Image (cartoon, rainbow, N blue to C red; front, side, top):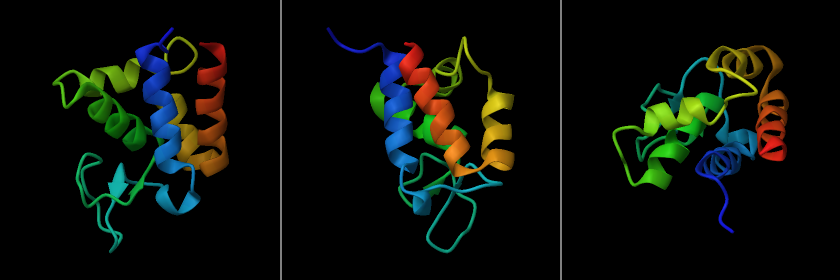
Length: 107
Protein backbone atom coordinates (compact mmCIF):
# COMPACT_ATOMS: atom_id res chain seq x y z
CA UNK A 1 0.00 0.00 0.00
CA UNK A 2 1.41 3.38 -0.96
CA UNK A 3 1.76 6.15 1.57
CA UNK A 4 -0.69 9.06 1.58
CA UNK A 5 0.48 12.07 -0.43
CA UNK A 6 0.69 14.17 2.74
CA UNK A 7 3.13 11.71 4.31
CA UNK A 8 5.24 11.58 1.15
CA UNK A 9 5.47 15.38 1.17
CA UNK A 10 6.46 15.61 4.84
CA UNK A 11 9.00 12.78 4.52
CA UNK A 12 10.67 14.42 1.52
CA UNK A 13 10.63 17.82 3.23
CA UNK A 14 12.30 16.25 6.26
CA UNK A 15 14.94 14.68 4.02
CA UNK A 16 15.64 18.05 2.36
CA UNK A 17 16.53 19.66 5.69
CA UNK A 18 17.66 16.64 7.73
CA UNK A 19 21.23 17.96 7.60
CA UNK A 20 21.21 21.24 9.51
CA UNK A 21 23.48 22.75 6.85
CA UNK A 22 20.49 22.57 4.47
CA UNK A 23 18.11 24.34 6.88
CA UNK A 24 17.68 28.07 7.49
CA UNK A 25 15.74 30.67 9.47
CA UNK A 26 14.14 33.95 8.37
CA UNK A 27 13.75 33.03 4.67
CA UNK A 28 11.98 30.27 2.75
CA UNK A 29 15.27 29.40 1.04
CA UNK A 30 18.81 30.63 0.49
CA UNK A 31 21.47 30.04 -2.13
CA UNK A 32 25.16 29.29 -1.52
CA UNK A 33 25.84 33.01 -0.93
CA UNK A 34 23.09 33.20 1.70
CA UNK A 35 20.81 35.23 -0.55
CA UNK A 36 17.03 34.80 -0.42
CA UNK A 37 15.75 32.60 -3.27
CA UNK A 38 12.52 30.80 -4.13
CA UNK A 39 12.35 27.40 -2.39
CA UNK A 40 11.71 25.87 -5.83
CA UNK A 41 14.88 27.34 -7.31
CA UNK A 42 17.67 25.04 -8.41
CA UNK A 43 20.03 27.39 -6.59
CA UNK A 44 18.36 26.79 -3.20
CA UNK A 45 20.76 24.99 -0.88
CA UNK A 46 19.03 25.82 2.41
CA UNK A 47 15.33 25.85 3.21
CA UNK A 48 13.22 26.56 6.26
CA UNK A 49 10.57 24.02 7.26
CA UNK A 50 7.88 25.67 5.14
CA UNK A 51 10.23 26.11 2.19
CA UNK A 52 11.10 22.41 2.40
CA UNK A 53 7.41 21.47 2.38
CA UNK A 54 6.77 23.65 -0.67
CA UNK A 55 9.76 22.19 -2.54
CA UNK A 56 8.73 18.64 -1.61
CA UNK A 57 5.12 19.13 -2.72
CA UNK A 58 6.28 20.68 -5.98
CA UNK A 59 8.71 17.83 -6.67
CA UNK A 60 6.24 15.08 -5.82
CA UNK A 61 3.41 16.56 -7.89
CA UNK A 62 5.59 17.30 -10.88
CA UNK A 63 5.12 21.03 -10.51
CA UNK A 64 1.34 21.09 -10.29
CA UNK A 65 -0.15 24.54 -9.62
CA UNK A 66 -1.68 23.30 -6.35
CA UNK A 67 1.69 22.32 -4.84
CA UNK A 68 1.71 25.27 -2.43
CA UNK A 69 -1.74 24.33 -1.13
CA UNK A 70 -0.67 20.71 -0.75
CA UNK A 71 2.35 21.81 1.27
CA UNK A 72 0.12 23.72 3.68
CA UNK A 73 -2.44 20.90 3.92
CA UNK A 74 0.30 18.37 4.71
CA UNK A 75 0.52 19.93 8.19
CA UNK A 76 -3.14 19.41 9.02
CA UNK A 77 -4.94 18.38 11.15
CA UNK A 78 -2.16 18.46 13.76
CA UNK A 79 -0.58 21.79 12.87
CA UNK A 80 -0.91 24.91 10.77
CA UNK A 81 1.53 27.18 8.99
CA UNK A 82 1.94 29.48 12.00
CA UNK A 83 2.95 26.54 14.18
CA UNK A 84 5.59 25.46 11.67
CA UNK A 85 6.95 28.98 11.28
CA UNK A 86 7.17 29.38 15.07
CA UNK A 87 8.92 26.02 15.40
CA UNK A 88 11.36 27.06 12.68
CA UNK A 89 12.11 30.55 13.95
CA UNK A 90 11.97 29.98 17.72
CA UNK A 91 12.52 26.27 18.27
CA UNK A 92 15.10 25.77 15.55
CA UNK A 93 16.13 22.85 13.39
CA UNK A 94 15.40 20.10 15.93
CA UNK A 95 11.91 21.50 16.56
CA UNK A 96 11.05 21.41 12.85
CA UNK A 97 12.28 17.83 12.50
CA UNK A 98 10.28 16.83 15.58
CA UNK A 99 7.15 18.46 14.15
CA UNK A 100 7.64 16.60 10.87
CA UNK A 101 8.20 13.34 12.78
CA UNK A 102 4.92 13.85 14.69
CA UNK A 103 2.99 14.37 11.46
CA UNK A 104 4.52 11.26 9.90
CA UNK A 105 3.85 9.13 13.00
CA UNK A 106 0.23 10.31 13.24
CA UNK A 107 -0.58 9.36 9.66
